[in-house]
Length: 174
Image (cartoon, rainbow, N blue to C red):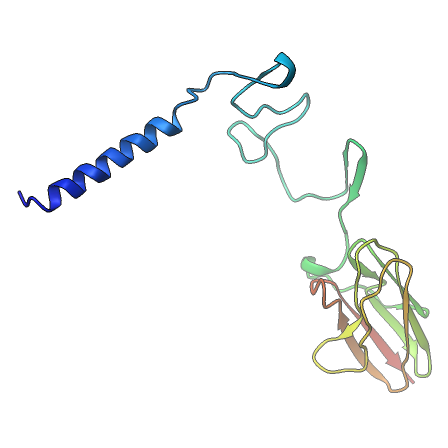
């Protein structure tokens, strides 16, 4: 046996044993907590809860609809984005930014119409043409608006540069 290899192997083995001993030092027992309470070494879900992805946890399908947690309600966006479905064009001149989506996602207006986007969310969003185009807003904070007057017919695809999954179109007719 090579004498240079043996001390290195012994050192690595000693390090591995020390690491295992340190990692198992708590042994899975309960530990004293603050003010005389006992804290379990394992993570335990509360009543009616489960640890997602943990053995025994169950879930099915994508998160949709409204989910309630103590003190908050979260509604998942139901339109646009990843579903691949094309939104039916809507007429009007206002777009609302809410639920991390532009509503309506497809708007049809006549040339000369001014469209106004209003951010109804706590997060900032932009209205920016995809590739090339005239739409270039600064980040819009809650309640802020951006307006643009469309003069030429065509379809104008746009997105939020902060959240690029947020996309929509304005179709301008004569």
